[in-house]
Amino acid sequence: MTKKYLLVILIPFLLAGCWDLDENERMYYVFGAGIDFKDGEYKATIQITSFANVAKTDQPNQDLFQSQVSSASGKTFDEALFKLYHGIDEKVYWGHFSFIIFSESALKQGRIDSVINTITGFSDTRYNIWLYCTDEPLDEFLLALPLLKKSITLTKIADPLNSFEQESYIEPLDIRNLIINLNEPAHEANIPYIKLKEDWKTQNEPLSSVEISGIGIITPNEFKGYIKDDQANGLQWISNKTIRGEITTIYEEDKYFSAVLRNVKVKIDPIINGNDVKFDINVRLTASLGSFEGNLTSDKIKNLIMKKVKKEIEQTYQTAIEMNVDVFKLSEILYRKEIKTWKKLQKDGQIELDEDSINIKINIEKLTSGRKNFRDTIE
Image (cartoon, rainbow, N blue to C red; front, top):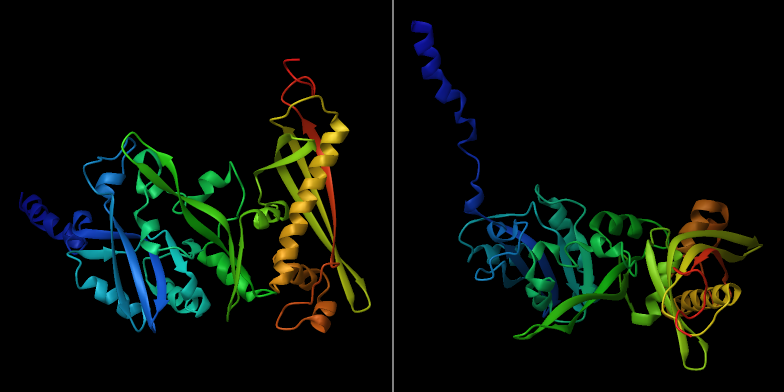
């Protein structure tokens, strides 16, 4: 009996190892942040989320706030964060930190490196934090809710891969890939550009949504500018990560058709002639005809799709050349495949490119209509 009593006495001491852990309800969770830099100071805006309200399978309680936003400024990013801590009631946990939005001013003044160094230095954060840039007010993005007021953790900027499967317009970028891109030739990174659109309505009020509509290009030392809207369309056709995209083109006067493009496969080969380097860009994809009027032949549809895809690639490339940007990462391709030539021609990791540096070939491997033929259903 003595041994049994001794065991009962010792059990509470064996369970005491969890007493110093933080209780979930006694912590606040930083989910997103906006970073600005003006008047010589960092302005940090953080979004604190209540998982008691968002961690549900059904619609969150609309009477409770899903998040709150606050800002503070400091000579360093750390100082701005500690000023924010002055007015926060509980311990702040960074383990669920999901995205950062940089202002144009922060990018132009080269402040992204300092912020990334600080964030990755936290023991709780990870390298898969999504990155964005904008020239619009930062706090509006942090206050925006998903459609139908679902969990704020499901916004487009917090979970970009979900919608990327349906429309692969701009490839998401996280901290890990930012570091890789800036360390590899041509030492440039494409950060998704976002803007707010008041394009949804309810019975009570209009609602804003976040739209990814281009890229901002940075190097380790400078911000090179934006490629927005239609000018950025060609990016999706030069990426093997593209899952699904769409084109609309004219085929007769005042008549258009749309096609959904999938299975994009891109191969880029450098063609070297002495000190002259050109790149053959071969794009293979499948297409499915969507909206159209009138009667079309398969060959005509293929030719029009190939022409439109090529035009979008050329338009994006031309915009980038005018900005002195290697948007298709051709310098890295030469570095990987012909390093001796790259070493001879490169300057700061980038080779000189012009309008004639690329030769584009598009191939439609399969075309479907979703019907038995490419004729009108009603004639």
